[in-house]
Image (cartoon, rainbow over the protein chains, first blue to last red):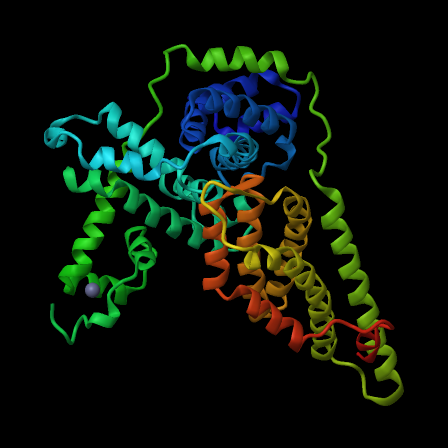
Length: 188
Length: 257
Ligand SMILES: [Zn+2]
């Protein structure tokens, strides 16, 4: 029978590194998934996986078993992603040209049989562009709500803001995504 | 659409639709969606958008992914767990210490005063004093936050290709945010809902600013400006400051408690 996460955490805290290997292997895919959705980039997602487990290992004493271990990990991952994206955008945004209208026009004029395509590379591209239009805070709040099922309260705690602020970041994200992806949704 | 069950004025906003779709909405909203074809259609569209996003996943990982992660990780893990360090000790602890010291002063003054003239001070009075002290500290915090935000709101509109450099503000913002969290938490504990709500709103803008790029593009700067203007946050802040003025040079207001 599989050992529970809290039991493994206890073993790590008593000096058993193998137990941490089990934790890392158990959760690495889902942390990668979160990292990818936060950044839209595999390399960054890899970096997030490594840094999340390093931080988890260092701060393991702070984990309290009243929340699930994966929720705790996701919170670490989300915080690190925020820092990462923030430092990235400082460099990228200066050179990025404002091509928002351009890609939307591309979607709108795309092949009318688009609805017959399976989940295609083009849809992926459009989603990733739409996600990139969110601020990092909106993106984090949305990813945690939509994919990780965090409660509003948990999102507020992860971002260090009140529930109201957390809620409004999600609302703004949904509004922006709805607008950006409208051509795809009506085509389906 | 039946005018009595779903009048034009009561259609759901985009925010309410998101709230409804995440299952967080009040029952009245659900009833409205069920009765109103327009809102029903809009909910469907947003729902389809969210479903489309639901299917968005990272490219598939190779089968040995987990052990590759561990091999890399094992090389960089410390042999022993280090004691953890606070990321930003200064701002939080300075604010916490200042606040704690002010409340102690206020409460002891309260006791000193009551010993002379009044029957024993009751706890309601003491917490009242604590609240007024909090508002003095918060006023100071809000004034400093306004000093950072006002120039952004009042900046001239820029050409979309230009960038507004906010890196200087961001350094201050990190400290302000740490303070803001602390004061907000204290206001919540004191059940001072108005102050907590204001600090919540301020926190939202500060977080946004903290995590925004150091150079805002024209549209980004405009977006921030617009949101600040729409929320009339600065005038709420001014309102707070004028109804809770900060102490004069001699701190007369604090002593008066
Ligand atoms: Zn309606």
